[in-house]
Image (cartoon, rainbow, N blue to C red; front, side, top):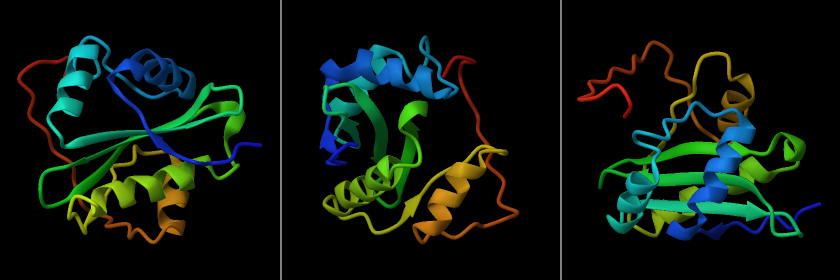
Length: 146
């Protein structure tokens, strides 16, 4: 069992984060917005915190990105290794992300959950989030890989 003590990660943890995202089955864009340079730039910009949980052996088993636009905080890229799910790792990461955002003066938290990801929806609902059915996510991108 893990001690579930989330810690801030750094730019040097990029490879570990990418490995975990892949293991967890996240849809990532390693040549676009999820590439090393973008990851580092977002950390340097001060609007992204990368928070992780490690197993006793030091393996990264959970990660989340806490970002904000100065008004609203976003919980992004929440991933837990498949062998470590249903042990409280995700809930600890969501709480840590909220705490990191609160420390920056953010009081509104949001997450986008892909259709069919019932486990994530259940996690956020049980953590006090409201499901605003009928809201549409729209996006405009300058490139396909971002």
